[in-house]
Length: 462
Image 1: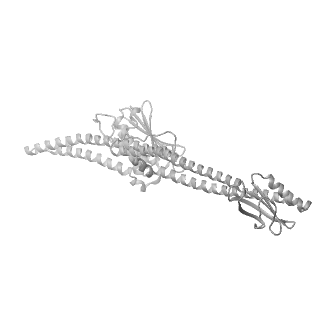
Image 2: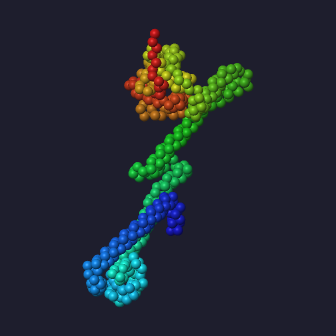
């Protein structure tokens, strides 16, 4: 129990709730004090007004009559007030009482407060009095403060109970709300602990109410999804690297063993050395490609970006690979709007490498008779480079996977290639802020790389 209370006191939401409750309570007390002062002042003004009106009413009898009329009026008022909430005094110049409930010769003129001991009245009852001279005599009218004091006491008591209720409600409500928030924060913390212990499938539960904690939790879950995908990708890449390197290393070992045997017997080993060099170059090219992709993803080449026309880049790749395609029994054509420049912000060498990989990928996986087309178009604020063929295409369920490092459609991994060509294409596109789209041409595959355009297409005129 003490641990739970200590944890609650350390809770940031509970501390915030306490702070809010304290500030609210302070504002409530200050507001109550102001209201109490205003109410007391208003009651005092009303009481003084009533006293003054009664005084003026009695004093008016002297103006209309003589001293006997004044004495009679004071006596009548004194007799009428049975509960002594209102008391009266009329004294002569010598301080002798002529009429009334008490002798007020010692009271100053004007308003004053005094305590009176009268029969049937609690001792030291406070009165508010007004004194003045009427026809040479001193007239005093006094009203009891008991009702005003009782009302003020009731207000203070009500305010005190309200303060207590609000305090309990604020602290209790703050504790409840804080505990709910704390449970959600604990859920986030527990999920992070699970992830740190290797449970990459752990996710923060969402309440669905769309508040800020849900928003943060959703972002964390998204980051965890990305982390899980990266870890899975690393595991897959590690397995693929092990598989792809094991085969050439085994071949290299067999070649070297054969060369060693021939060396002992004095035979020529030039063929084995040539084969060993080819195998080592294949291994080295795999690592070079991995390092190149990592360098591109790190953004190291962005310093070389310039505004360039991609038209000549596409034409160059088309010219270089046209003969290669023809030798393979395939055709490669380039379609570009004449005398038009398509500007993007990028690195020429990387763009050429990207297009070369796309064309090589089509040449490698398409059968003889396949037609491959390179083209450049514009859609809105984007320049689109297309590589289309009428070959076998890529199954829909595999299209999101082909950009992974060392991923191959051939699960046996017996076909030529390292599985890094499209990974490099994806890295170059991401570096340029471009999006890659794969579409089924039925038959064939269409690859579209969409680059942010620089300016508008420039058409040469002669």
